[in-house]
Image (cartoon, rainbow, N blue to C red; front, side):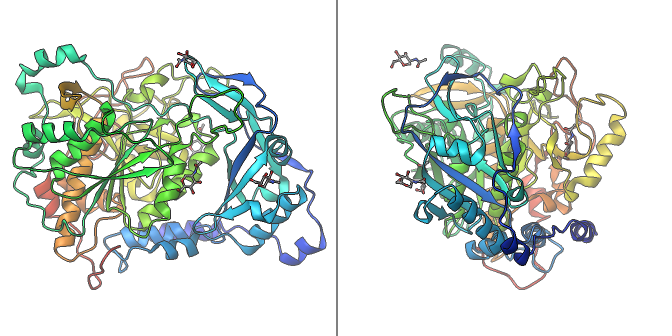
Length: 596
Ligand SMILES: *[C@@H]1O[C@H](CO)[C@@H](O)[C@H](O)[C@H]1NC(C)=O
Ligand SMILES: *[C@@H]1O[C@H](CO)[C@@H](O)[C@H](O)[C@H]1NC(C)=O
Ligand SMILES: *[C@@H]1O[C@H](CO)[C@@H](O)[C@H](O)[C@H]1NC(C)=O
Ligand SMILES: *[C@@H]1O[C@H](CO)[C@@H](O)[C@H](O)[C@H]1NC(C)=O
């Protein structure tokens, strides 16, 4: 029923495209510039350090709107709704490309705008699907003209991290309906901090290890979440991906030590490394975040094959007299562009990075979210950590002020956890019963509307909430997280030593591991993998989770939201029970379809 309602709403919102004949009769007024996005105050701690050197060029990416605005949304709901005849018939790369292709009129208009500014067609290339254009080698002065921008160098306080950005940009009025976003412009991409903070320093780890009962290891999790006895049987087809940003690398010797200690049945754990945009991957420089993520997906899902995406795009130190400035610093975009161009994608992907949603220009967040949707339609289950600052968002955003200069305090949602096409994971602690971990971020987006799959769940929560916190959150939008798992007391091997870590960065690889095992089961039965999870999760799978009903996620000088019966914006639907979920796996209505 929900899906029917969705398509009715869609039909009402069809965009009317300017007629071709009109466009050829009247040359558009390229000088009628309208602001696309402007900051009142630059987010984060970026400080302008002046003009870039003369001769600096920039590569601009232009996201075009698809010809058929709702085609991809309709498609992903069909293939991920267990009750739909097309359930599990995931799209190929080419099928997705056709659905998101821009109208030829959009392309013509944008090309003629670029031509008007003297950009040679040879400098313009299209990404897969043709809905992102890349314009290479644009001199900064020309980029300023094209976009009514004022590009400057900005440095993040206390670091040497330097990027080229503008505090506002504009487009000719006629292009607004055709262009989703242009990057890099106003997305400052303040460092995507891995959102765990180790409780103890290394010295304290050994002492903490003596209190065995509070520590979390793969054995604890496999027993708590009931996956201990499952033997993966589809390792020829199944794969799990783990992303690494910010120069976080997995130490392979640390992984071997970890598995020897905590998964002694698992010999020779391995993973593939895919290096994206020159990440300078080095297994001898293990990072806490990367080790944590890989050790726990392996700890749960071994011997499922693993791939580690090591994503560069971290701005290098700026050398003042160098003309080769690294201008990207948009690691999610770099990673997504590569992912959508692959013929084969892993069935499950775990990501423990994110940032306060308000620091992403809304159009930019929407463009990234569209790319996650493309991966979902391809049959990928994408899991994201919900954040570690309770209702205050990421750990760094706790003053909770809106960054529009108004000084208004509001709960801080975390992106990409708020993208409706990913599954976001909050945190719990203790056992029998598990309760919400206070660090667990959750709440409501200010950018993304509430998706139909969670309407009932969210309205059920609001009934229990009443008026509490009204004005601090946006009641019409996407609620997060969707699920939760243990988040405190994780033992990790790093540089040959044991360390205790906490955060939703811990929960996410655990849930990804469990989902990957469920995918293994489906594939071993010649069924499609689970793909975009949420319609299934909020439907028949919801009873396969342990409902968490106590604890809360304080922040912004409030007690935060409380975990209550049913879905809540602290622990979502709850923590997984692998055996109960096995009983609730979708069986496609149509004949089995092979994935990927
Ligand atoms: C086109 O690319 C070349 C080589 O990268 C560059 O020198 C030139 O400035 C670019 N032209 C425009 C208009 O962007
Ligand atoms: C920035 O670069 C300078 C020169 O290379 C170096 O001395 C300094 O330690 C760097 N600062 C930071 C915070 O990395
Ligand atoms: C990132 O890598 C992709 C694929 O290798 C490449 O097409 C793209 O130009 C790279 N981007 C940057 C900013 O280096
Ligand atoms: C509330 O969220 C919606 C999207 O669901 C958004 O359009 C709206 O601007 C948000 N309101 C505020 C005050 O942020």
